Amino acid sequence: MKFSIVITTYNRLALLKRAIDSALKQTVPCEVIVADDCSTDGTEDYVCQLSQTLASGNHSPLIYHRNPHNSGHSTTMNAGVEVATGEWIKPVDDDDYLSPHCIAAMTEAIAVHETQVVPRNQTPAVICSCQAAQVDPDGKELSRTRIIGPGQAFYIPQADIHYGMLLEQVPFGTPIQVAYRRDAFLKSGGWDSSLDANCDDIDSWIKIAQYGDGIFINQCLAYRTIWPGAYNQTFSLKKRLETNILMKEKIYELVHQKHQKKLPEINNIRDYLKLHWGLVALKKAQFTKAAQLSSSALFSSSAWKLLMITVASRQLQKFPDIYPAALAHSTLLYSQNLSQSQMLDARANLKLQYSRTALQEGKLNSGLKSGLTGMALLLSQKVLPFDENRLQVTDKTAYPEAVQRLIQGMETHYSFLDYQSKLNVNYIKELRSYLRIRCVLVAIKQGKMRAAFQFAFPSIFSLAAWKYFISLMILQKQKDALLIQKFVLIDTSASSNLTDAEHDSP
Image 1 (tube, rainbow, N blue to C red):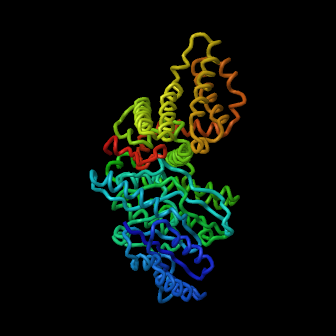
Image 2 (image 1 turned 90 degrees about the vertical axis):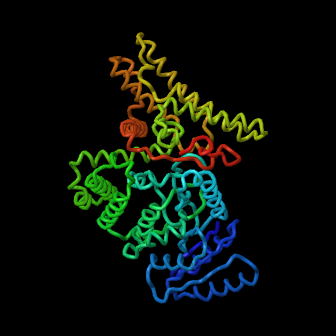
Image 3 (image 1 turned 60 degrees about the vertical axis):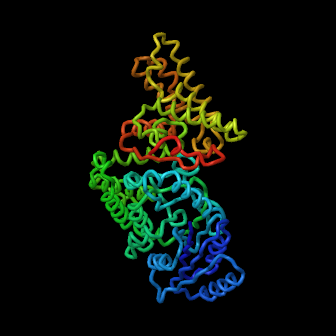
């Protein structure tokens, strides 16, 4: 499997040098192509001289392509891909750069997909995305894109991708996060120059995803520079809304037949986007603009419902190891229509089975990790999904004790999580407040007003707890709309490639 790294550039030689250096330092040798949009700052001389130096030293090839005239970012990317000879393309803008292990990690995940999935389903992977860090112009890290699914690497079947993109559950991200198959890119028509620097990349991901599966890697393998006053931030909110609607309409047309019955009406999606951008305007204190963007959608209950579902599902993606609703739509076991309890049982058993095997083979670290995870999942059934029947007690004085047992059980479950999982779960006190709110509402429903009052304070004032409660309530009612299958390729708890595909066929 050969990768070509295509670096697009225009008059930013100082930044280009960093991008080229990160490409040449990959632990897997790659073809590196600099696609220059007719720069006038000495880029041509520098790259050509470096290319000759590398050629004489038996290094990875560095190829220079120059547009005959300034043509824009999309045309430059298309030209670079035309020159490339690799099976996979890794795009890089000149102000971004790669981790030395980026191509190696992508190669590994793609290879696992090819050996474990393609022989059965005959569906190749055509697009691969990773976690990225946002850095300021000085290289200081500002934030990272979120972990969005199970394991170190997982894939989403082609039939689910566009539905997932429509519901904003499948965010491929910016070009520095993404790699794609060259043949799928060419078949899709490449980047649309009419969208230059305004969702031309997203438009491309939409089109490429018609031809195969998507792979996601939960490792930070790339760095994206965030510039104050960046060009794409100069577009008006109205223009960004219009482009957002256009992208959704393109995705809508490609949603697989299996999801058609669950598909929201396109008009409701348009109204949801108007509400979203209206809220963006409100955050910027642009009150007139907020009214202009959202006025026609303010009284659409369907649009508000879509907005709440989107916000809720984004929130729950941050802590899939705690809540069964998030667990349910992030595991292959969902495809078997099992109950939440059965899914927890099955996943726990897989973890415990692997733990025994790993320990027998002397893999102490991964064996203990899997064993603890399996025990935590079994323990969670005593806590989740917060069944109201568990609080049906006849003695009102016993009610607080029942609630406290639930809280203690949840805290025990939390203690089993590894460090990374705890980072994704916010503070335990907020989760405790959420559970208390849930119990307060159950108590009110059962007419236990005294017990409800006892547990209402101060949890009732926790905005985070209410956010969790509303998120779960929406997702549990809309779980059929979120059946996007995510199949683990590489398990973070295993030292080798333990895949879900080895246990069950998709």
